[in-house]
Length: 489
Image 1 (cartoon, rainbow, N blue to C red):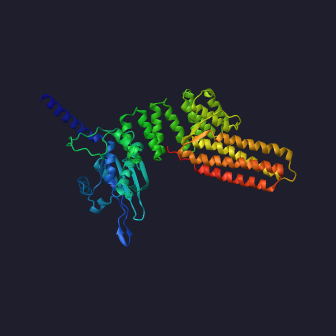
Image 2: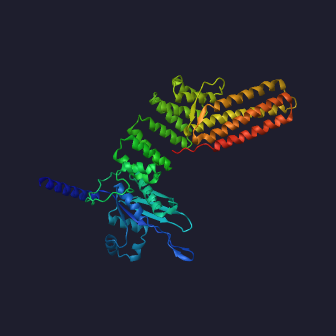
Image 3: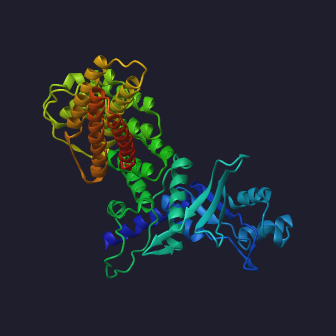
């Protein structure tokens, strides 16, 4: 009996605390910004979509602001109208100045206007939102854009699209405007009656929900539970890394950078953050910035092989072969697959293709772009050499004594390039890429042989065959570039 009394007392004190602290939470007053009606099939058409049921639950889930939607028949609005002697139509569509006055009467800190419309001809919603903070003239946050209809089971789902939009807007408000606002404790609710669990019901645990949504590829829906996990465990780097990668997958680089900055402050020695920063900068086309980021990280963590390999790869991609060689040098003699593969790339980048050491590397999606860059460079150099041989042979007075050894070296170079290309074993995503590249190499090798025969025999058909094979090889190389796998962040 005494334990029951203590429990009741604790619940009463908790409810009193929540009631007394409710006013401390900022209040958000939301107004509809309705678009005018249009004509469709000679009939009046209202394009406005009610976003309230799809936005409010996610705003409330943030537990950072009190959410209220403006209604002209609300008691506060009616009392305000009586005091100001306003006409009823003024409350239906209040002007911006009147909205600010109503917000003060409401005791609101923020005012939001929401417009969401859809025209019958387009499978998308157009939205526009703006947030003002009372006392400031300009909006403190605004956004606009389009939300495509979601297709589920082969049919467009309007509810799913609007829920996805509401979830995305709530996450953006949380990270871009209300990041510094504290989250209040979850409200105490009476326990719901036990019900039979459903197999298709989503798990209540945010961790399970986030993992389930990520596995299903429902990335927009995974944002809020993953954001909740980060807020609940701010010192857990794994959740924050998953959130950063999710932002990147959803093409939200600004939010990804903000999370990277927070994570770097909490975990300054986590090499994954430097790698993610570099990957993000490279994806934005800022290769120099990515290299500088990794150079700083390697200076702070010289034993990090992951950072060293990533820096080596970016330097090779940028064409600074000597710098890449210097980065690899401290571990170049180590016998492991990753070092061996970088030595193999260096042989190709430095054109040292004779007497290649035995290599048996797997060409993954992540390795494909750099491998193709080096391989296509080798083939392009050979094609240029064959073209130069043709030009010199067609000159008024060819130096055949000089052209013969050059044409023979071209054959040897072609064979060495083929050997270099054959050192990798493709995976399924890189199979077409490797096949096109090797076929281009084989055609260039045949072109080199025909060019050498032309230098010896002066037969025009040999030169024509060499030229045709060279052109076809370059087309095949373009096909290889088109087959390059597109990596997801």
